[in-house]
Length: 215
Image (cartoon, rainbow, N blue to C red):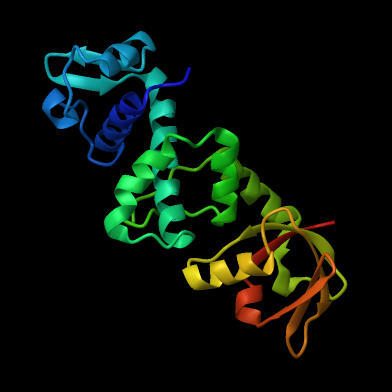
């Protein structure tokens, strides 16, 4: 079921109030909406919320949907700041618009690109998605920093684990993106990798932020 943008925003607020502010319910004044508003009826119809004299609260059925909405919003914020280099003064409004466009597959691709971040730019936790849990399991078995693998090793880039925006943009400009095939050509005195028909050199610090899934 695809919710309207306003309905998703209500779910986000309720999840934050419940899980981060420890409030059992919220008033309609806090939600900046009316109990007869279309988005409220939409959430009631989906059994995602319940109304009482105290206001509005999340039902068990709406918890996961609300968590997903918060995750999309905070991933959108990270994308705005880390990759698109949008000023923080414009980040919130842009992220609010962008989050509603994210489908599950796109959301997971963005999360992988960003290295499965755990915090948004405001320092608030980003709920884990399936891709984060898969990455944790895979990392123990076949995913490693490319700085730690042997010369001649081949694989595909799994994710880029860095917070430095300039370094991330530099790697992307080199063509180092999740899913790209890569081969270790040299490890000393500098790291040299082969991507397609090109060879790319970088220092150890940058190489340590590139994680590959070995063949």
